[in-house]
Image (cartoon, rainbow, N blue to C red; front, side, top):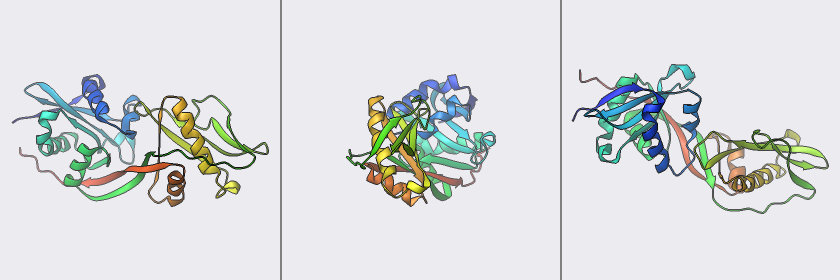
Length: 246
């Protein structure tokens, strides 16, 4: 079977991106890259029929376009996944592959096709509701909810923690960010604001999600205590050289 891989506009891969997102039951962090113009896209064809797509972005600099970050095939062609992936590597001149481990299709390609694979971040989804309280502390919406730090925890009129949402991920997921002022850390305010932001996310008809660096054990412990659970990792690896058949 002969497959063709061609560079494509966003509109040409949109139908397959929607199929991919429909299969995706988790927050897909690379979704924002398309609207921002941070990726180059490639369309996969068989007998002039589109059968899938792939996207590349820059590992260190966005303009480098040296890293595969999306890979999707129609169900009947997934048995040819490795073959098409190798062709994609050559067509895109890719050096690295970066993906979420809960993106099964691309993760399997990464483990088969790359070396020196390392985890960059931990991904979290909501697992259970918590009911933490701190005497005198209150959760306050301070500005427009579109701002990432639009919410705060206040105690005795002092803002001790701020947080909010990043909206540019695949619906219905929303990314939670928070920060606790240094002199108020390790006192439960981080868990409290995370707990309240989860509740707020559901009011906005969104599913809360979060992530942290693999080396940030304090943040990981906080997220787990606030009722989140690990649902995957972001990994990156160096692609093993593929020899072009031509």
